Image 1: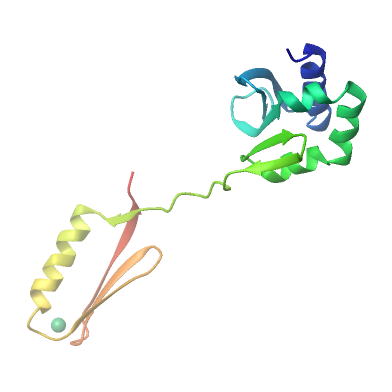
Image 2 (image 1 turned 90 degrees about the horizontal axis):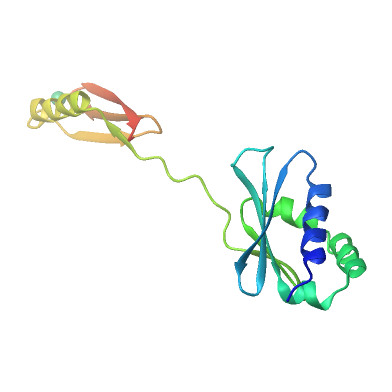
Amino acid sequence: MTDPRKIALFGELLKESFPGDHVHDAEDFERDCWFYRVAVGSSSSQRHRVRVSAEFLDDNDEATIKTKFVTWRLADVIRGAGNRQVLIANGGPEVVGQKDRDPPMITTVSAHGLSRLRAFIREHEYCGELTSDVEAERVWMTCTCGAVISRVLEPVT
Ligand SMILES: [Zn+2]
């Protein structure tokens, strides 16, 4: 059974390291781990996730936990991990998982734009060579006769 004072102590150390942020109390996330969440202010938006192994809390006294929190630079590690989970065990801190990336934006041409592009293709099909190009926000079609059409790409919602 993990000493509740040590569980509370670790939460206090997090609170001191992230002033202004809300540290959610430890949850018995898994049988052998304690799970803390650091959120911006009192909002529910999650900033950091910290998982502390029960073994680490059991094997170290309160003074040692405090010392290791400092010498392992846990506040910096947690801050640097962003939204990745930080696992703290006797071997030291470990950042788990990949940094979340922005999902790629999927864009398309509006239905109206699409019918205009189809019409352009029909119109110039037998006229010359058609080439198309996609930029960040636009799709272009050109014909060797000099005709050009471009349509704006919109994010798919
Ligand atoms: Zn043409």
